[in-house]
Structure formats: structure tokens, C-alpha cells
Amino acid sequence: MAHKQHVTVWYDREGDFLEVLFEKKEGYFRETANDQVMEKVDKDGNVIGFHVLRVSRLSHPLDVELTATHSGQ
View 1 (cartoon, rainbow, N blue to C red):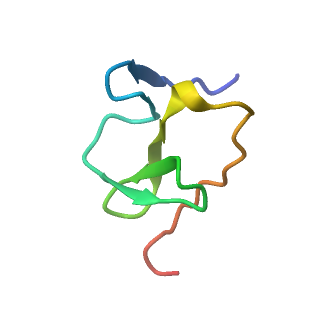
View 2: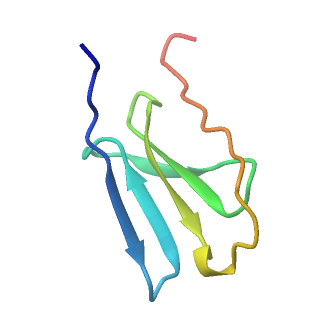
């Protein structure tokens, strides 16, 4: 049986950013290699979402690697 995951997607037209959340829990945003993308991580460093800044200015697809770090590594 396939595992299903709920994803929340929200676009803020005024702020011009798109947010995608894999989990609704406490976390913080940190930078990625792309200055338009911030990843949201929980207290253990697991990626729980991301947001894309200046969405209306995108002229090509973004290719970004989200990095999860786990305590003990």
C-alpha cells in the first residue's frame, strides 16, 4: 500500500512567495544554495517544508537540493 503524505501549499501574492509545508509543526527557516529558496526544518534538522521568494519573477524552473541534517551525524 502506498504511503500518503499531506502537503500544504500557500501563495502570498502581496509578499510574492510560495510556501510548501510537509508537516505542520514548529521549525525555522534556513538558507539553501539558491537565494530564492529557504528550507524549513524542525528542531532535529528534518526538512518540513520550504518557501520560494519572488515567485512572480521566475523565468525558469528552480533546481534546489533540500538538506536534512539529523542529530548525531
